[in-house]
Image (cartoon, rainbow, N blue to C red):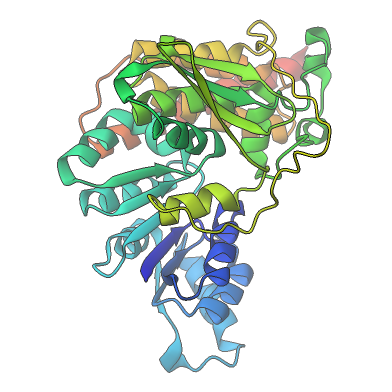
Length: 397
């Protein structure tokens, strides 16, 4: 039986992970659950899965969780060990009895715990883009040094991972990642400046959190996936292509030197890649619908519009530049996306804030996770200043 810590247990990946565990009680057990501020959902998860530890974001969240647990019928003697913040997350991820960590906390909040789990040689099911986007070089060095396993959970990288099992790694010529195209695939470029947050949050395929949904609308999310893929599969950006595939059935393709292309195809259900990450190298039954090949279907594959979605091209440039560029890219994007959601900048302003933040931040070569976190904080501060300046300019105008 595998013992699991879930970082980000109340989010989409976390709840889907727990559903896989729920369906396989003889194969998996939960050691720890780490959440943010959703103590109501976390309390329900504690009552069902009875973890040994539970972690929240802040000390005030811990007070709220304690108060909520006191209203339940669970005796104090059966409560999990409660913690908060980075120290709590690290303890949950590095506990000796833990085999596998699902890293699904959005943002750099989960970076330290994921990195320390890798340093303990754990298997990490990685669903947190920021881990590799912000600190890919350091993380992959630790994977090699400590013999950890990094199995991607994102559907595209998980699909590529599966395709790479079918051939000689040295014979790979290209990795092709698919993108749904988001809600604005057919929207004229001139109309994008006036789109609303509500429109941008209507993803045609997946149900996700607000930031990742907006990143899908700008194709920034696909840019992050290109950066991740470079680190996961040791490929330069020039060997990674993106194609728009609105049906979201083909998740990734690998082209080999002889021209053969292998594709990973499955239903749009995150429980399949989660199950794969937990059971690899075995393939267990996953609670997802199978594709009905008796039904007629049509799949499209289109080139992305780099002019309409410039953040995708910017991601390629940052990965080619190396150093701290991708860390700044991620930090500035998170600030800009939040500013858009709050109505401070227009949709097109997301790119403008990110691009200017990159232009103003000095290039560095981070040597530690502490360096990464410092660069992240400085990049966020600069991006906030740029947002405020733009918002003030809009009001003046």
